Image (cartoon, rainbow, N blue to C red; front, side, top):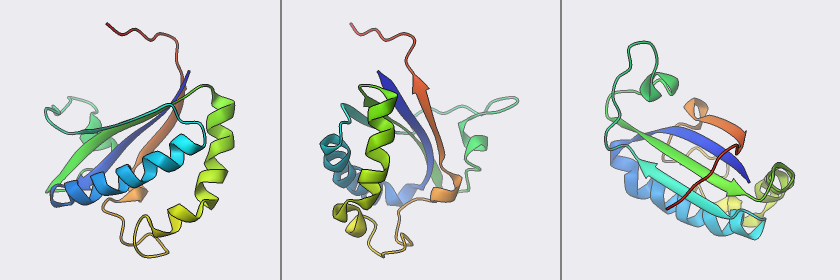
Length: 123
């Protein structure tokens, strides 16, 4: 299993718009091999002494942190899916304006990473 992880600053008032974008993105990712997609809205994010989620995304007044991840069978599948998803015509209308200026979050402050799973347990 491979995981793409994200932390995203989202204006609190854009929660519904953000969720709408995530809902539109899921079928595209699924079509290219994604096995799971989770979007988690800030509920209890503490300020850290040295670093924290807020500092990682340079959170501004009135914004919330979203913690998100997507699971893939492996890194090769995730890598192959990336360019295909970006070229998918469904992506063109996802954010409204063709240049993405209507995104309900600041993509420049989003933190993205890929991770190889070393332990996964579920009850």
